[in-house]
Length: 176
Length: 138
Image (cartoon, rainbow over all chains, first blue to last red; front, top):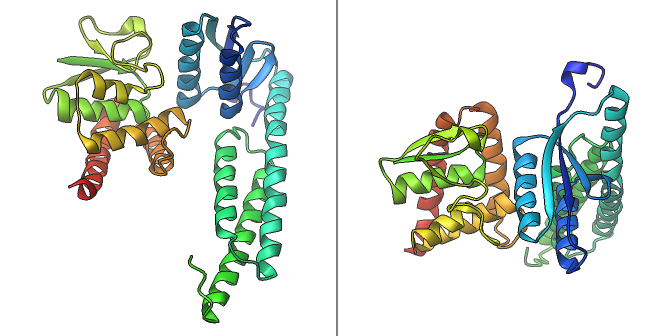
């Protein structure tokens, strides 16, 4: 995809500075950027691939920073070379890996428990599925582990369903 | 009256357009601009940084509309929660509908890139949401 210069992604870059105190504004902005899946290029410089939604989210963040007494400007940008862009895309993919790995491990735990006849796993599974959707939302470049996480969740759901319908079959209704 | 907002409407702005047409100004006309400097003269701006009808504190623009026009409709309040969660993604109200609404409106934006056309269609979506939530309130 990145071999063609024409197809290169456009990026939105937020450059900001906030007063040291009170620190809660700095924390809130950092948390919001993390939630959006943005990457810091360096201190106070965060990047996201541009689409209508990321751009809008950064516009509101810019406003919040200004209201908190800070300075913020929003830029559209393109890295100078294909190599730099490829590096950035790689960094975005890497940034999602840990979360997906955790989801895979947890989903496998749920699946094993279900296969051993453990109950009350639906809620746990639902929470994992929600985490996955959150993660996918900020996974802008399809981190390779996404597929693995989706498969692990599917296997877990299947095992939990099996366990539940088996229990119902035996007359041991356990609520949901 | 002429209302104007930025191009590329997502949940908050499409919901505001619907709210304006149904509850604020049935004769409303809308303009969508790329840059705030292109906004038509005399238009009432919404969901634009610095406008009266925009994000305010923790509120999204839809919520600001409800407050500014004192729309105390229980169903609108519920829709506001859904729009808020879809727009700001802070799970303030924990409304599960927001995820679905977000996906649907994002997809509609892809197939209907023109905002006039898009909002014509999303109006029906919010009519449906309003009707559905009304069943429970009445």
